[in-house]
Length: 247
Ligand SMILES: Cc1cc2nc3c(=O)[nH]c(=O)nc-3n(C[C@H](O)[C@H](O)[C@H](O)COP(=O)(O)O)c2cc1C
Image 1: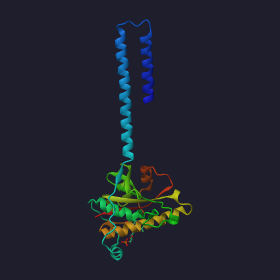
Image 2: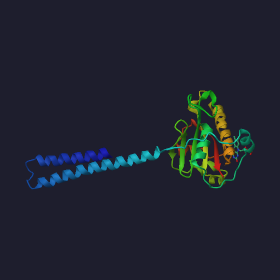
Image 3: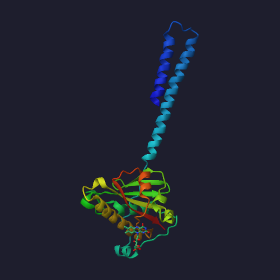
Image 4: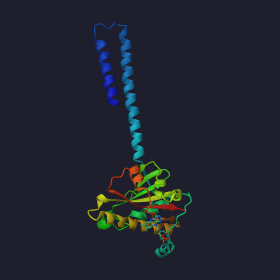
């Protein structure tokens, strides 16, 4: 659009310059033409700036990155207690969980526990690290980046009803973690290994939730078609499980 407008202004300017330089222009008309020329130049600048701002704000929305608090690795709960308390819950209130709790949960899901080698809290087939954790709330969907300990916004849509489909009451849970296997990371047996890798992440979510006194349930049920469409996933992004989490 800028270039169309630019061409229009250039054309007009050329026309104006042409009149300015022609012998037929009266001395009285010249200041008016110069004024018009200045007006078009200013308009062109303003329009370009306006479009730049609109483009920047559109991009900022898509790439919004939020730093998570450092996960507290000193949680005072034994593995035996967490295993003892692990169970499926299917009724949730809309009470929010804290960012600190979310950070703990994501670290357990697929965070980095050996930074020197970039290895994860979960094992993955051939160290493919194919499991991606998406955080889904009323505000939209964000992708967890384990290295940066950040959440990057990928959608402003509340997809919790799509995830809860079939068990609609669960959409009340303040957070869902969606586990997706990026099959491009797996060289062979992608379908099987992807499901297994997500299973480890899911078990870690069950255990950390038990340790934090939070409710959860691993769910295979969801409207995969709608979710994939909303998030613009190609076929290589396989939706494995989702976990509503809350109180
Ligand atoms: C792979 C997998 C998929 C599951 N999908 C669902 C589901 O879609 N909805 C649901 O309510 N529970 C689901 N569950 C939870 C099981 O129903 C639950 O673990 C089982 O009933 C045993 O209960 P417990 O977890 O309290 O031991 C799933 C569990 C697994 C491991």
